[in-house]
Length: 153
Image (tube, rainbow, N blue to C red; front, side, top):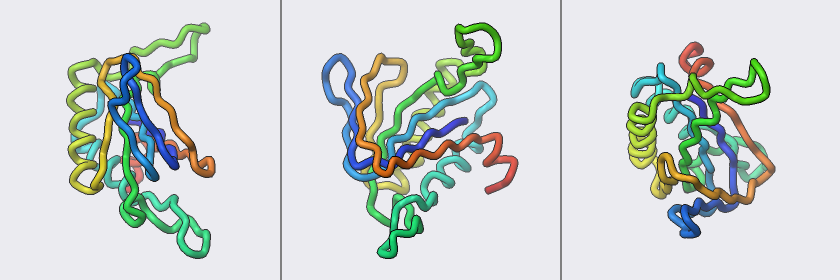
């Protein structure tokens, strides 16, 4: 599982010209799922996301989590995070999760996040989406379950 987390001032997602999800201060989460991902892996990734301290405190130190600042979350499914570009110039997506598994885990991650964060918006799985944001910092962090789970962190 891969998370690309962007700290945002605001973000929104549109499908067919209609806004289907919109947030203020918080995280835009691009979520990639592989065929080997499980709910246990998702739980560890969500725990890391919720407690990630990348918001500034009163001393301008990155000491605060999304929960600490009352931040919001916009979750976007993005299978292209598992693009394999090793051979040729056309990416392979063989490592991306099969749609049934990926959709199940996408919904699972959203539900788990809603247990911890008051405002959780999301895109539409499998749809062509237009995502816009104002990245604050900019501050972008990549989490890969291969590293998170292996380190038990």
